[in-house]
Image 1 (tube, rainbow, N blue to C red):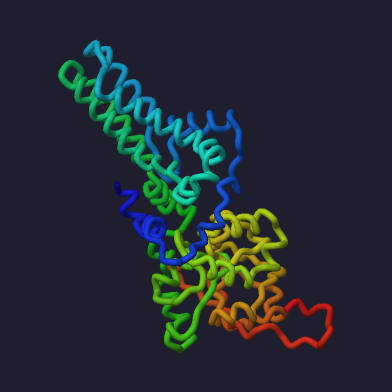
Image 2 (cartoon, rainbow, N blue to C red; image 1 turned 135 degrees about the horizontal axis):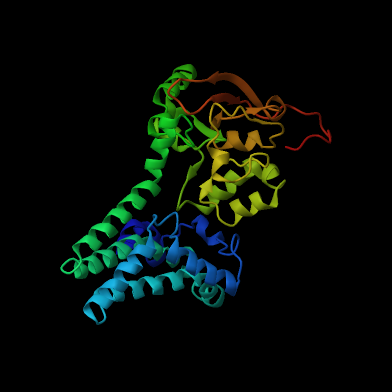
Length: 354
């Protein structure tokens, strides 16, 4: 029910079509998946015992042991067992969903567009429900055992929590990623806003090596974004900006063309992993040759590029370097480029790519 509520817009587009064509029609479910029976079995076992990064970390073995002890304790099937069998069914469904799409996806496109495999988000709740039911059946005869299981699960849950690990790294002085204050970097963006000196709604910005969410938080209007639903026409128009760049690397091209939820400016030199959009001020990275169409960028009212990396061929592609911005409380170092458009080229010049 929650999945339907959160994704109501997607279901509305399906069951009450308005003529709006989303980028999801170009989804290719198999762009990053292999059809393998052994792989599906391993995927099932992995999510059962290790969980999934979108579903939270749960230590399943102590819960299974608690459920087994509860079964032996009362000598009959327990409610915890029934919940665990539900978990098994979800894990098998998730592990073999690729085969379901392969066999039925052509006739039922919703299997691809909605990715019902994401029922996995229910797993942490179901594991905790099974755990609570098992402990409830153990508490009368074995209160110390219950205390032991609670202590183990608490320690593991806290120790594996992403924010806990991040705080430990912060205390040790070796942060792996920014905290909220460093990420949104309000003081840094105030500096950029003051430098540009124009109403934010009068221009659009795009990013390289950094996520647009921070700019959006600070009130900037961005051409790039992480979007679950947006227009197919917009996806194609945005692609024109980086057509030459993504065609250098087939993996990156497929990543955008056959998925595209991350409507980001992609670079063949930076790659497509999450770290390629979290380049901090201490990394001091550069892009030697960025091939983007700045005329297409201007056509979308894109006037500024916020870049976490220095672009060595900026002038050749129509980017004018303005200034580098830093702040002690910011994770980012932003190199600000003004989009002036491709330089004029002589007719017939073979270097004219525009």
